[in-house]
Image 1 (cartoon, protein in one colour):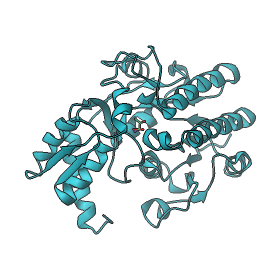
Image 2 (spheres, helix red, strand yellow; image 1 turned 30 degrees about the horizontal axis):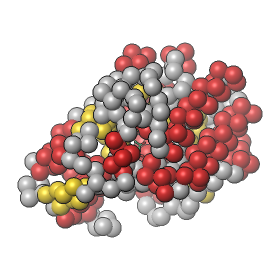
Image 3 (cartoon, protein in one colour; image 1 turned 30 degrees about the vertical axis):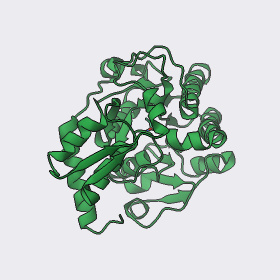
Image 4 (cartoon, rainbow, N blue to C red; image 1 turned 45 degrees about the horizontal axis):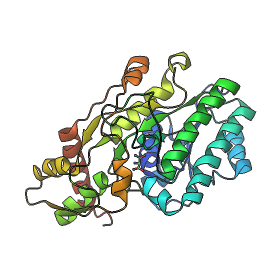
Length: 324
Ligand code: AKB
C-alpha cells in the first residue's frame, strides 16, 4: 500500500465531482487526485487544476488499469444518471448505475487496495415511507428507476462489505445545491436553476408546485460530510448500506421568498411537470441521527446562509463573463 493517498474520481464532471475534485486537490496535492469522466472536459478549472483522463466506468479493464497504474487508495464513484434523466431512459440508467457499481466493487474485491465512496440518495425512499423525519431503517419502496438502482446498490454495498470486507462508504444525499456546475438531470435541480434564473432574468418557472417540501444541502456541507465519512475510522462506520444525512428542508415558495430578500423584483411561476410525481414520492425531511452519533456529522449552512452565498457566487460568475 503506498504511504500517501492516491484518489480516483469517476464521473468528475458532474455536480458533486466538479466540487469534490477541486476540494480534494486543495487538501492533498493536485497530482494525487485523478479526475475522470466519460467525456473530455471543457477548458476550465477542473481540467487545468490537475490530472484528467477519459474513462468509461462500464469498461472494467480500463478502470482496473487506471487503479493499478496510479496505485489508487480511494475511489469516488460518482458516474450515474439522476432521477429525471433516468426516467427518460430507464434501461440505460439501470445499466450505468448498477454495472458501474459492480465494476468498482469487483475491482476492490480483486485488488484489495482501496476504499470506495458511492453516493446513494433520498430517492431510495418511496410513497409508503414516513415522509417526516424519515428514519434510517424504514419502509423503502422507491418508484423511480433511479431510486430502485440506488436501493439495490445499497444492498450490494452492504453485501460486499459483509462478505468480502470491502471498505465501501455511502451517503443518502438530499438535493444538492451548488454554483460551480449546471443542474444535471435531477428532480431537486430546481433549487439550483432558480438561482441562475433569478440572477439573469429575475424570474423563474418552477417545475414543482410551491409547497413541495424536500430535503436539501448546500455543497460545502455535502463535501464536509463526504470527507468526514471517508476519513473516519473504519470501526466507526457501522452502516455499510448508506447513511441518512440532512441539513435543511424547504419548499420552492420558501426558497423564492428567501431569494426575494436579495433580488427584490424576483418573481416565480409554478408549472409542475412529470418531476412533481417523483418529488411527491420522496420524504420532506430526514432523521440523520446515526451519522451525527457515529462519525460526528453536523451541517453549517441554513436556508438564509446558503441563499446569500449562492447569490453572491452566481452574480460573480456572470459578472466575470460565464456562459448563460
Ligand atoms: C435528484 O434529484 O435526482 C438528485 C437526488 C435527490 O439524488 N439530486
